[in-house]
Image (tube, rainbow, N blue to C red; front, side, top):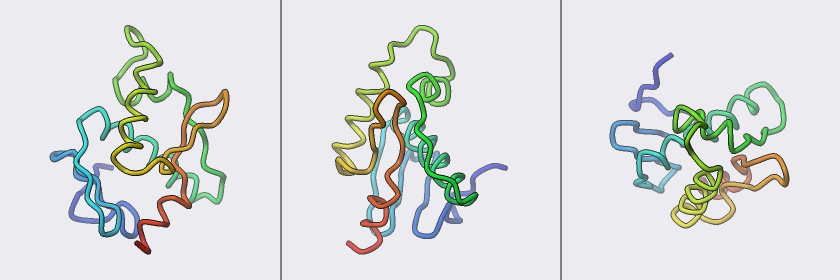
Length: 117
């Protein structure tokens, strides 16, 4: 199913792939293409887990490289770390959680703060 930016992905959350823009409740974030693809992958994983009642899974650096860059071949895993750091600088340090020895995931309670701020 293709994403339609005219409809929210989840209540209060919109993604615009053409503009690489994330709208979280009343906050808009302009991202680079790679930041956008990385955030999109993390967010969709979190929403899939939420919809099935499962805990939000951590995605490994290799999974994120394959999803956002198309392949893990030719990229250092530090590439993911740098892009996560940039996303945190733009959106807040608590939006993406580091899960020790697993990878990264969206922090659902941090997304909830956007709804009330």
